[in-house]
Length: 357
Image 1: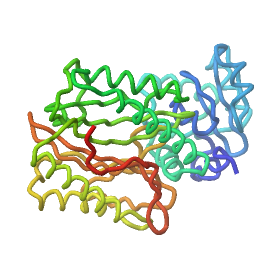
Image 2 (image 1 turned 180 degrees about the vertical axis):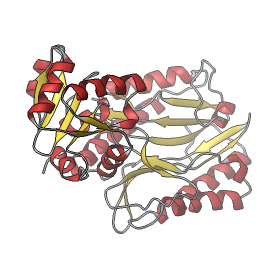
Image 3 (image 1 turned 30 degrees about the vertical axis):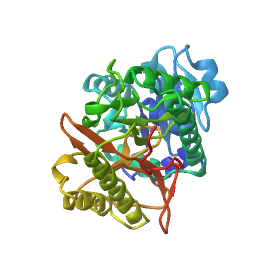
């Protein structure tokens, strides 16, 4: 059954339709990409409303739906609603502004329909998206391969005096040249004391011997993201840098060892966080241990303290503990994995041993 067919069956009894606004969810259900559009789902059919910029492409590429090339959205959508006898239509609440909601309600009113304003549709969609299909997993694997190949090539180019920004640009170029649709986020390449900022921005500062270099990087392939972090030594580093690296590496492995179907995200987070705390660095690990990944770089679930979200077979999450000593240095190691009934499958193949480049 198609994703739209599954969604139509999951509509609650008090709704006979759903309207999806976000570009990501429209892509998820139809495989069609556009900056603007509306996906109306009924129990029998689905309709993708696009304007003249996208009508020809949508007719050729959109899956499992009827494409409506609208001229006046309010008229054409109201007509479809009336033809299908829809009375109560759920809205994708997280993707609509107040003004847009008012506009949609006026369209519904023309067809004597009402908007159901709650987060129920978002919950249903998240329930679907959190379990990845084999096709989605293959696309994420391809994105990971592109990411790793680009990193391997770029590591060979690093020499004393190169800037963080130059390294980041080289990485992005190699990803795109190898088939990436784009980067998963603004690539994070940090060296020296900048590594103490978990989401620092690459600057014109230059790499020098004795630095740690942190790469938090990812590519997109056919819409799907990869996400990984590796921290390398550039030349000889100090004993505390080595100790922190060893701490983070073991904490990450402890969290990975917890992952399997039926385990809570909070338990996975605890496995990393408790180890880091016992090593004396608890106050320097402030973010969650991981997050879901898919068409968005951050998706449900959050692998965070006290989260009771239960992992299930087919979920994709990151495991990325870190320790960050302000104005000194930081270390993070991150893998993206697929949850299985007995454990996990790791997308990443690059070594996590402390490597000197």
